[in-house]
Length: 109
Image (cartoon, rainbow, N blue to C red):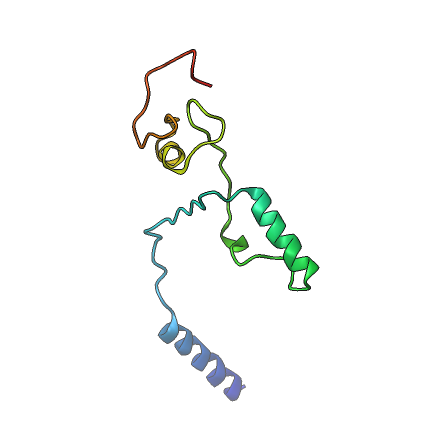
């Protein structure tokens, strides 16, 4: 009984000594892999499976969602206007950076 009590007391003080305060999250990392679609990741996974290298990619634990976007006047957006769209939620015109076009019913999607 005495050994058990001493062991539990030791564990208690050791846990207090090595315990660290949990700090709140301060930063969010937004990774925008320009030019990389879901198909590229699927092809990479199949390549790994085919070569007996596992079936997961190193980036898999970091994926929490995907977003599809486009320019205001083109279905496949360039990196600059689509990044502006990610950040603001407003589609930009192809070739423009963080500049938003006036409404153009004949040209807008």
